[in-house]
Length: 128
Image 1: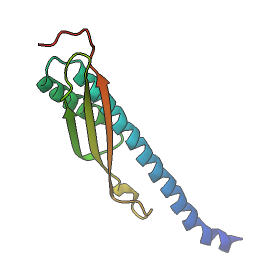
Image 2 (image 1 turned 90 degrees about the vertical axis):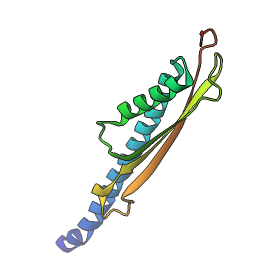
Image 3 (image 1 turned 180 degrees about the vertical axis):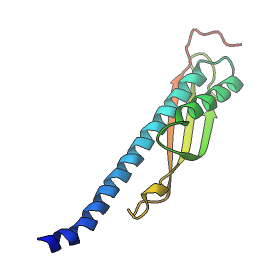
Image 4 (image 1 turned 45 degrees about the vertical axis):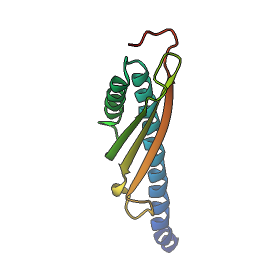
């Protein structure tokens, strides 16, 4: 019985570490999607396309700073081609998550997570 436990313990530890790693990736993906949603909403509340880009970048950075995940590279892309009353603004957020703490599990050291969200611009809103 002791020999079986000694042989199975490392396998069980690897399975446990893999499950923890998969959970961290899923949690990081949810954070990136939330950041993209918040950035799109912030951009839709501004008065100009330039302000929309700045607001989206600020919101996405604020959402992903200080979380349990570490973004080594953060890219925020804002599409303001339909920026008018009744239009919409699209925001894409890409974050390269650092997974180097999970070595030995078969997971990559880094994973790039992306999310794209859109938010409508109010139709009865006065834009300059």
